[in-house]
Amino acid sequence: MDELLAKAMQGVDPDAPGAFLQVFMNLMGLVPWVALCVWSLVFVAVGALLGWWRGRVVEGVVWAAVLGPIGWFVVLARPRSKGRTTPPPLPPRR
Image 1 (cartoon, rainbow, N blue to C red):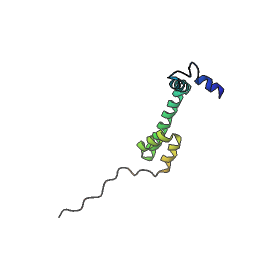
Image 2: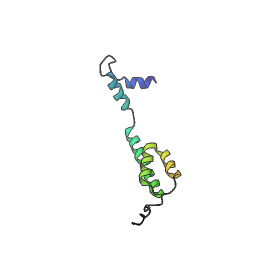
Image 3: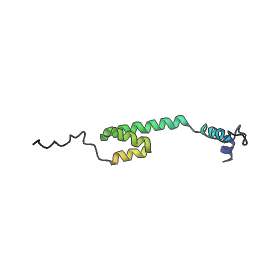
Image 4: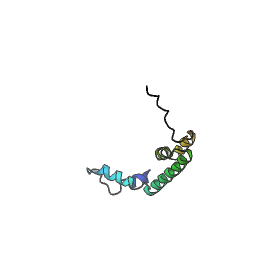
């Protein structure tokens, strides 16, 4: 924990008005953003594939984007889409 605190406080004057923002930016610099973005794209791609297989592409993408790999199970648990159904015919005119 001391190492993380030292990295967060590197080059920060605690009495300066912008100290919070500088500490926040130092912490955000430690996050592996490229890996997070790549994994998110992989999760969404697999969700789209599973959604296509189940007939619900948009639903697969949304669930995978929101829940990651847990969203795959949500898509798989839902019944298959029967495709586009037509509405029932209108009653005859009098």
